[in-house]
Length: 88
Length: 393
Image (tube, rainbow over all chains, first blue to last red):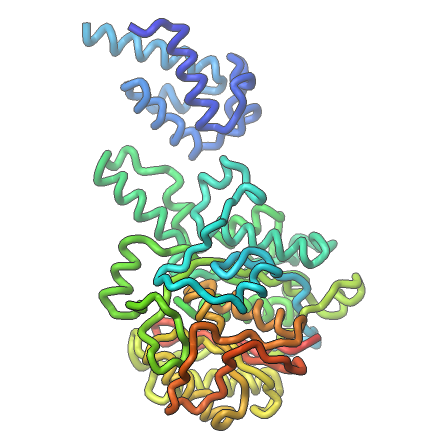
């Protein structure tokens, strides 16, 4: 199983490419809108690529309330663990 | 322009061009004299959006909108940078024939392969025909009218005319007007092919005996239109003036022109009236000249009717540019304005053997001239006719 650190690294690379930001900008407290320039449509597109990359489904209610990059990392970690547990 | 007459004259102070014949004014003008490739699909091969758009911006704009932004940027720079303008009185008129159909076609593939949940959330804002106008307004903060006319292959000409009226009637001080097109997809090319509109030989040769259809193309052109006194006051360089324009519909057939080009002739006469000129005042015509058997015959008949047989030199740049559909009229308006600057009429490249039955003086090689009022015509599927009269400043 992928370690949390590996998973964070993959998410970081995917996000940097998708949002056209530098990895250094992807700090846990980075605000998705103000710091990373994410708007609603770009958020949907980013969510799709996360789902495809990690084989998870982002629940709309969780995704819509996310404000910082750290919250995204936490959510993805949680969903990947849950998905792995379900398959075990 | 006679209608509406608010005492305001409309001048062109900047031009921006993205075309298979060249990107930028110098390359474009030079390209218009060059031997065109033998190719049915005329793409803008070396277009890179990087000088005008970030990677992130470009990814969320269809190629036709990327062309529009690039052309608008070049045009504004050419006009001396964004003129000091009241943003609420700055507008955009940017036409297109088919808009972002390339994006739509890609997303149809995504839908089929991966299901509805993977269709891009950017699909609609990329596909909509007004995406180009919106992107240009957004970029420069222009808050006046921002509109898109779509009249197939007449959209570029109609948009320049509509933009000029927004300046002439006092609504706007500055308008970025033109057209953009990038709609060569497997489906559209197949569709134009089965309707036998495209050239089988890949040779665009307007008014030639052997013409066998048009070469589909892409591109964009944007003109900076300003009120003449304000433009002169800020020391702007003037390419020329929009003297008049007209729009009519054949109401005859969805794709075929009316026999004898009667609809086109009516449009040209109305444009002359709008410009308060007589047929003999027109010193050159930039033809729609698509290289299809039907268009060129009807257009030549209309020109002979309005101006008299062989009475005025006629150029079509589509031998080189191919047919840029909704961008065509704007590209051709740009070529007319450049012909004032260079004091030379562009040749009708590709054409070697003008059909003897056509009673027009086709310009086959570059021809020096004393610039004067020039008519630029566009005709679109749907029977839409547009005529623009441009004059040296």
